[in-house]
Length: 140
Image 1 (cartoon, rainbow, N blue to C red):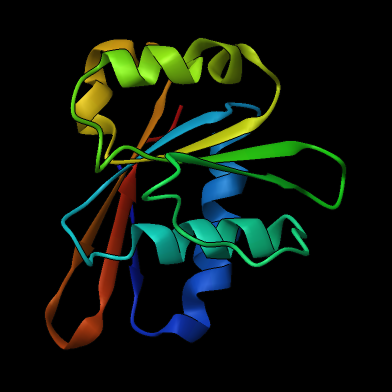
Image 2 (image 1 turned 45 degrees about the horizontal axis):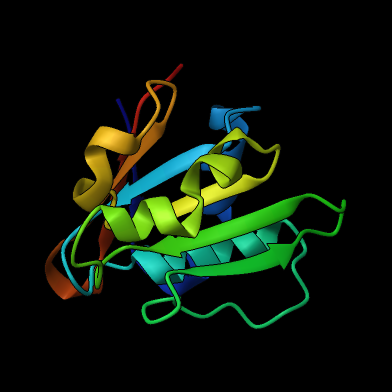
């Protein structure tokens, strides 16, 4: 496991770049963390690093937002916090997204754990004292 400590928002872009370097061509990223840990903020940093020109917001009520990176790659940002049953995820057509070449960034993946493919990249975000964040992920 690699761990990055992020003492302030100014260091977030470097953390996003490091994570993108390490994950390589893997495209399904599960972001674990408590409410308020910074999952959406980290997704925003990844999207900014990839040159997304749009404003990145949490898809809490829509379940998914779609963005396009500067290189044309699609980015799918999922937030499963409000799902009531797994059938909602099936209705969304999650498998088409997961099987695409697009980058899938998933908040609250623990609610759909049985649907995640084995090659998913798991990133854990923790809030430490003083607003410091810690991001942990494995080398692949």
